[in-house]
Length: 342
Image 1 (cartoon, one colour):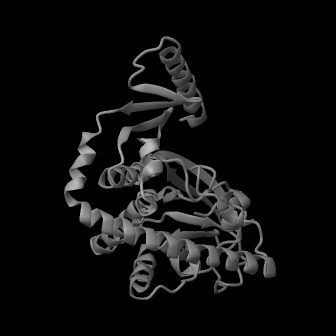
Image 2 (image 1 turned 60 degrees about the vertical axis):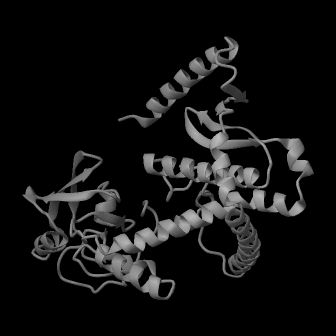
Image 3 (image 1 turned 180 degrees about the vertical axis):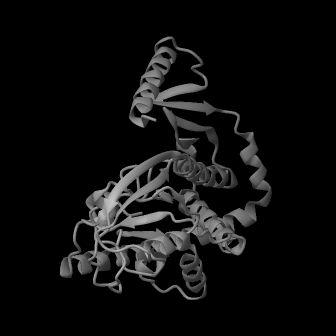
């Protein structure tokens, strides 16, 4: 599926529809534009008044949130300066996670590790909705009128907004404005904490999979030279179906360097065949063996689960290699950068 073509068609359709709505002056009470971005809004915002019933709680929530925002901002600034200092003293190679585009989390798709997927888009949108609702709730708690609220659309929903009465904002006490402006970030912090707790609680329900899903490909080794890519699943070797990393290991241990194999992989529902000649030189970090070396590493859910459990108990910084196993099922270090490794 050509996602670029689909994206271009979607942009063209959006431009035509948005242009027609704008120049035909349709639904002006509920549709406005900020440049090319279409805003769907409503002035039916009486539901925010519900939160005034717990005004004392929300004022306390806003005050605590404002304090947390200040503390976290100071800590993050200090960590950022420390990271900059360490990078200047020991500059990392500009590959992998240290590539310039991977410094940015927004917009999605620029960062190789934050792709444009439905889940990322929904998460990004809901984050902004939660953020804006925090402003609206504290506006009403502080007796500041909310004129309208709505969502922003640019082909897809990209955010939300709340429009307070600017005159009433100016007249509000400084403490009220601090609580109101900080409420959005406070909401995001609370939701992030809830999500983290949910992950911890749900982790015990996860069942580790032994499916041979490739995480990384060693540079200049047979698998990479044959065009095998990360995030693909090994489905068969020389026509023999495999269901686990153990199956792959058992077949590879019967090989010798120089053997030719046909590897069938699955990715995105598409099956591909790759012919490769097994190598005999193993990376230094792996035990050198007599069998042929293909040059891939797998996702290791069991290790990930153990690391996450250790992180919950005390947050160390585990080496990334602990999440990987080599083609024979043994843990190994990260492949040399050169091919995408997620």
